[in-house]
Length: 88
Image (cartoon, rainbow, N blue to C red; front, side, top):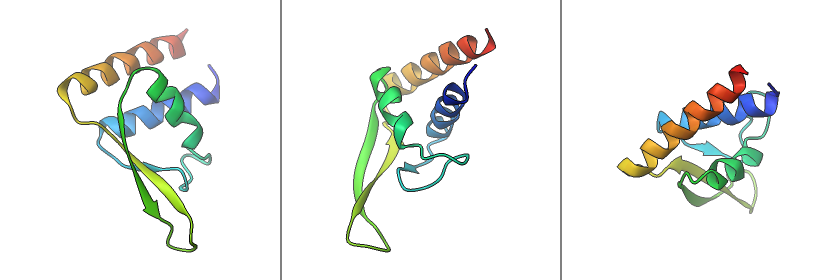
């Protein structure tokens, strides 16, 4: 099991706890931005909001899980699959 898959699983677990993740915040020592695309590619919908950076004129995206019943079920199903793969 690669660290990449562990981080992807952790990001999805945090989304299921309705936490907001941003691309500019370190997440377990890595930038979570690279995992958002994999989560979305799996069919899980994220709400993305552009937010102005506090320290410069740029922007970043804050992401949370779309809180529809169908999306939450899908996220839990994908998480279970990823965890099974991790155990192999």
